[in-house]
Length: 224
Figure (tube, rainbow, N blue to C red):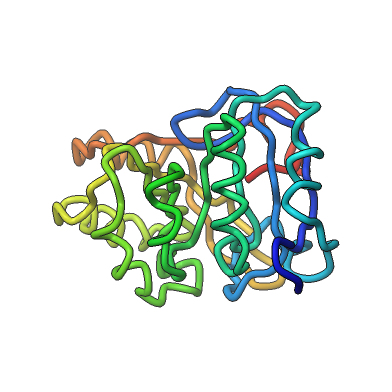
């Protein structure tokens, strides 16, 4: 891929469905490719394909939305060599940039310019590799960490990591993956009420989140 180009699955305008900024209008830039295959992935269509776009072309595609906030997502956006250059170009245009990453790729080149939302993979994802550990010291207090809980056993794993004192961001997000029994790559899932009760019982300083875009538009709605 030539210099200044990224491989893009889609660019769209929607309501942010997750994170502490849920409910705000966002421009979404979904880059193609991911090196993980999580059991609950809802964006597998971004694993392959896409089209090459120069950074100026991406900026032009985002401009008509009139959104102040931009999210780079995937797939895994930081796998692309030119992702840091895209972040810098967006920041130079006055956008507040967020990046959703699984944390298995270094955030060193983008952490100073963007708000990192690190989706730490739990054992129930099937992709709990521990590569995120190298990025933990780089995170800022203003960044966020997300845990998607795909099985009840994921809860104590995530809870203990939160209690370890090693997570610098103030915003820690717990999200319940709904059951996929009988489907390819099935996982047991976690009920939202059950998760809420565990958080309250343990006095855990986390934010329970639900995918707002799917609550509004249904389970097939695209999101982060």
